Amino acid sequence: MNLTFKIKDAYLRAQERYAFFGVDTEKAMDELKRISISLHCWQADDVGGFETADAELSGGGIQATGNYPGKARNINELRSDLETVYKLIPGNHRLNLHASYGDFGGKFVDRNEIDTGHFESWADWANEQKLKLDFNSTCYSHPKSDDGFTLSSIDYEIREFWKEHVRRAREIAAYLGEKTGSPCIHNIWVPDGIKDLTVNRLKHREILRESLDDIFRKEYPDELMKDSIESKLFGIGSEAYVVGSHEFYMAYGLTRNKMICIDMGHFHPTEQVGDKVSSLFSFVDELMFHLSRGIRWDSDHVVILNDDLEMVTHEIVRAGALHRSHIGLDFFDASINRVGAYVTGTRAAQVSFLKAMLEPVQKIREYEESGKGFEKLSLFEEMKLMPFGDVWNYFCLQNDVPTGTEIFPVIQEYENNVLAMRQ
Image (cartoon, rainbow, N blue to C red; front, side):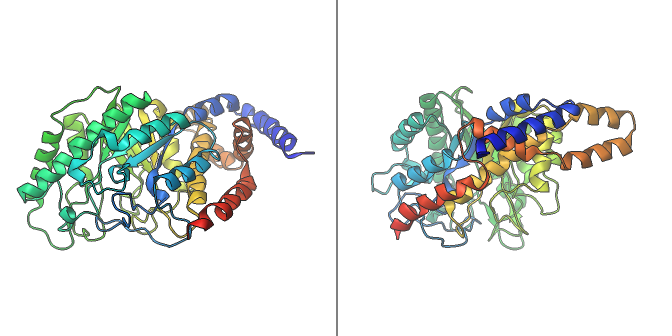
C-alpha cells in the first residue's frame, strides 16, 4: 500500500467521522484554500534588510537570536529561499515586505528617499511567482531612531524624516497593489517609547496622533492599498512606556477608520489574544493579524499549533469573519533552519484554521444557547480526538505538496546544496 493510497483511505474514514457531526470536510478544505497567508520576508535574513552590504538589525526593541548557517545575504538568496518555502505550503499565498528590503542596487538609499523604483523587481518577481504583496514602513535600526522616538519625537526634524518615510512607504504599497492586482496592506509599527519612568506620556501620544493624521491626509483607493496600525505592550529599551499602546491604536483606528493589527506577541503573556477578535469585529469591518508565538515576552518564536493560536483561528471562524481577516506571520528564529522555520510556522497556521473549520459550530451553539453545558463541553472534548490530521494530509496531497515529515528531505537537500554554500 503506497503513501498516496494510505492518505486517501485515511481521509475517507475521517470524512465519515466528521459527517456524523454534520461537518463537510470538502467544504472546509475549499475554505482553507482561499486563505492567503502573508509570509514575512524577514525570517530569511534575521530582520537585516538590504540597505547596506553588512545590514544588521539594531534597536527598536527587536532582537533575533541564533546564528544558524545559511542566512540570506541578498535579494536573490532571499527569493530563492522563499520559492522553496512556497513549494512546500499548500494554497496561494502572499509576501510581506519591509521597506528596508528594497532593491537598492548596492547603493545606500536613506529611508526618506525610497521610491517605487526600488520595489519594481519585487513586483515583477511576485507576478512571476503568482504572489500578492504586503508592505511595512521600517522605523527602526536607523540613527534617527536611536533615541527611542520616530513619529512621536519632540524633535521636529526627526519627526519630519519619519513622516516622509511612511508617506513614501504608503505610495510604494499602492504601487505594489496596482502591479500585482490585489490591495497591498501597508502596516505601520513604530518602536517609540522609554526604558524607565516617563513624564511626557500624553505629549508623545499627541504628537504621534498628529503625525499619523498628517501622513494619512493623502488617501489611496482601497483596491490599491489599505493601512493598518500595530500596537505593542513593550519592547527592549521601552519597557516602561510604549507610545503606540493598544488603547492608543484602538482609539485611533476606530476614530480614523484605519485597520487595527493584532500581533499575538504584542500583548501581556497572560492575555487571551483570541478574545479580542469578537470584541473588535463588533465595531470594525476588517482586522490584520500577525500570528506569532511569544515565550515570556515578544520573542517571536516559530508558530506552532498551540492553544493561543487555536483560540485566534477558532474565534475568526466562529465569527464568520474569514473574509474580513488578513492573516500574516511575524516570527524570526535564527537558531534553526530558516526555511524549515517558515514551512513549519505557515503550515501550523493553516492546520489551526482547518481544525477550526472542522468544528461542528452550529451544534455547539445549539447546546450553549439551550443551556446544555455538559453536552457542549463533552463535544469540545470529542473534537480533540477527531482525525483532523488526516484531512490536512489529504489537503496537502490535493495541492501537490509533501505531507508530514516528507518535507524533511526537501529542506535538507536545499540546506546541503544551497544554504551550506553561503558560509
